[in-house]
Length: 214
Figure: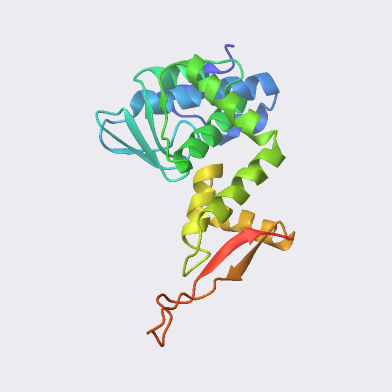
């Protein structure tokens, strides 16, 4: 491992070193040490150079326990866990999977607290189980759209409900709904207006709703 040491002077790694050393074991070692160096230097309550999970810009709050990331959303990280995670032998793969899992829970409305390596790996496994059952994902998406009921804008609250069910941001939720619509799994229909005997106008604006396809 002596070859790795010189590239970490002052907690930094040079691109030249990465270009010359492309062996998988070395790239993994470099990635772990670089991540550990970033988090060791992070100032409390100020901008982070990178999120430990996805390498996007992030901020910390609540004494460094709350991480606010533009990609992962929000999550809590027990002090010292970031350095511990980067020491895992499969950290590059775990990092990617954990970022997706944290993001998934955030958009489900359930921001997570990463307390130890075991809980982090458990969360990743729960995401993989969810992703490995596309029929269940489709069922939950359809239920979220249909159960919303009549609305003025079928691309507003129903899409938010779908995003909460699948753990997706608004743009991905809409794309998922459009795919279901294109496959005639669901469709948007006009609701019949409500009238009373004395009214000359419907009681509510023209509403639409998602229903299951025929």
